[in-house]
Image (cartoon, rainbow, N blue to C red; front, side, top):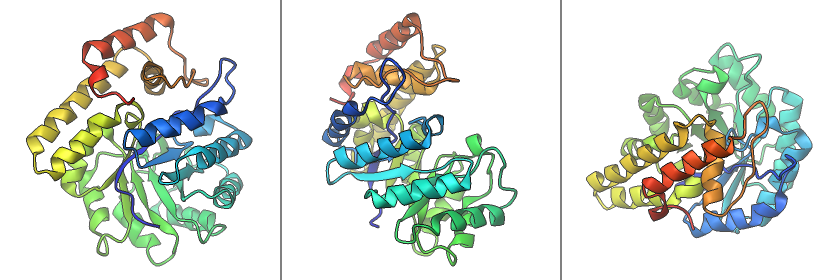
Length: 304
């Protein structure tokens, strides 16, 4: 698998008014992302409420993204859940339906007690799809798997041929940097904190997965372009705009996923509400978020 450069969106799952999958929204969603310079999608992850869906829904949604995405878009299907047999079933399904790769987060109920245990889990899971590249999805704030990822890479390097790299959703740039340069940059390291995109690029990142890339990709492609042009100050000014946007999204009392679905509706992609135990924001909170985004000039860099 070729390494990914640029932005990968972690798409929100479109639900209808009854809370069911709204599959007709996937095609326009995928086309919009491609039009705005997004290179790939990470489907059914945290942002997509993957673990709030049953297996049939996850497989149906993955099929839709694989089928409806433009040919140049890389589709990575997240398969993580607490039951290992379900992980293997989702992995097989992703491979059979033509996903470019899969992502696998650590279990979050019975947690891995060591790097060795986590490596055993990963190797066992991906053994059922030896030809499919699989990323480990590092998000310790959700899983409690707080191990250094350089230790995991060193453990998996000789044991797992289809280990593709790491979707790295954490702030530890020292660990991230060590993973990046391991064995001549052998593995694909996708950084997962939108608010730290520029910092990750200074550390050497070339690809990134994020939630706000769904509706504000032009802001982040601007950061990338300015950085590569040597205009770090200009890139930093745009990163500061992203900080302001993220603060305005999240400070009105809505869950981050629910708040960002408000932004999606503002750009014409209605992803509906969120599933319990998350709460869909009230009309009052929705209006506060909308007004706040308009006030900071969201229209200047929103996806179109």
